[in-house]
Length: 175
Image (cartoon, rainbow, N blue to C red):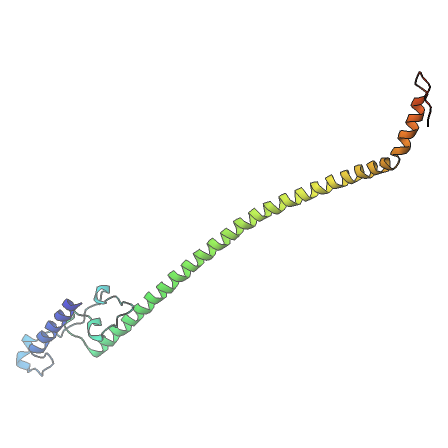
């Protein structure tokens, strides 16, 4: 952010223009002692969010509103920034894993639904096959019975003709 960068430069210039508080003091000026600058706590607003394609600079990542930036605090800020980036990366990975798990759950639900449908279809096919076996066995018995009578059909017809001939009132001669 350019405004943040300008603000940091102004603060640096102000810090350089003020007299150093580390200069030796005389005992006569002890009543006018200036308290040493204190470090403030860092809020989450002091860190800029890292974009995937952008490279973070070390100067803006330190606390921009602090009056005193020491090398140790700069290293602490860098470490905190790295930890924040690691946490954000872990959060992104966890979200991807959650999405993958949700997709996997949907696949299992869909396959369970398909298995239930296929199970019903298989049950219907099995019932139809069983009924077909019954029909085949009944019809095969009927067919066997019909074939048995078909072999004897001419004999039955001839004998019935001979028997019925005697029932006629006029004489019939067989040729």
